[in-house]
Length: 259
Image (cartoon, rainbow, N blue to C red; front, side):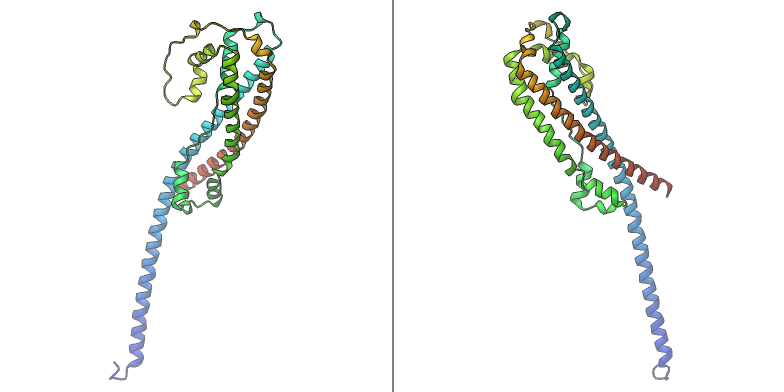
């Protein structure tokens, strides 16, 4: 072409070739981007399903722990009320049941394997919803104050209440109460509930009036009520955050179904 003075035609031909190559590259990139987007959407769909299962389980657990603490508070109020009742008005088994319930130490132990994997692997970007990403990334830190309050109750129970009861009361009967209280055991047990023989009747009933009238015991109950009520307030905050995450995930799952 150059020899025949057809330079302009050659340039047009070369430019055309370049344009075709560029178009081919752009199409290939577009296809690749489409494939990546499709893969990401599929991964997001799977992650959302896993997160929904994880946070639904956490919500169920936090509700159980709030319910248990409410029962513990009711037992505290009952024990305080027993202080003004006569001996023949107090049922020993009920007293032991209340003592057992205030001695348990429920803690919220959320399942966060999917959450931690997303954060540690840097895959949070796969979640389209920015609010959901922020809520999930900050979830663990929102548990810190709740854990602190739970630790206070645990320390108070193990370091003061249990030693105090051992010194001032026959605790064998109250410990056997758990074997008979299937309703309470069900809130702690992940598997099926076994049937156990109780040794309650082999343990002599202690005189409970000295325990109930002990001012130190009253102080414990008042402290326990305060700490437990505040812990449940913190639990309600975690519950609300958990419900918010579930609502967003559910909405995202519905969007995937409709698209």
